[in-house]
Length: 309
Ligand code: GLU
Image (tube, rainbow, N blue to C red):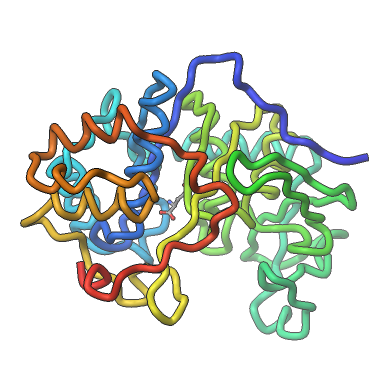
């Protein structure tokens, strides 16, 4: 048997961009925003904006406002009001309760030290199931039971994917010991609540998708279609991110940066577009957008100057 993500393509397209407010919008996130926005519009779909503010220790004060201001300056237009993931705390709690009641989630009191000798896979520790039969710890996380069944989905750009959770992550955390909701659970619940049909995001999150598909199965949700984009990397091959020193996008010259994003996404904007304003650049991009040119691509090397942006 194999768990296969069920596609929902018969319904109107609803896409989204879901930045975490861990710093200002950097160029790597701009690429994801541009691609997910253009794909949604190309499919006559909606494009939602959701700030994933559920991990305060990793967040930077003011980052949400900075990200929203940058997106506005770059001329993005989202549908409806911006949503904040912290506002769906009750829905996250209800989904967790549903999983506990179904016997699919269990308390785990293991500390980092308890897991020091646990086997490691590409996703980090493979949880060896220590607390599956019970835990007497007063502080605990909640883990989701995984099965031996491979999880499969067909990525729009990267093709068929398959992962065995039991050998790649083991039972994974949905509620952290510190009481915070784990990303895997929150993203699944919010995509479901918002009716998201298509997730276009960076390939660095593709490893998470099977855990999300598993949660969708257990919660009885339809799986969205997935499309994992190549991610921007610096000259050392590191993903552009705050932890690798990427700073916020240039707010003085959005036109030049938007053209650069389209070039790096291999859309080949004509040279004369460089003299155009934001509206005309978007107009060209909306008419010309073709996501298929990114098929099988996993990395977008950044020109050195652009990394400064
Ligand atoms: N909030 C995540 C991030 O900024 C993205 C989550 C997602 O697109 O599923 O990396």
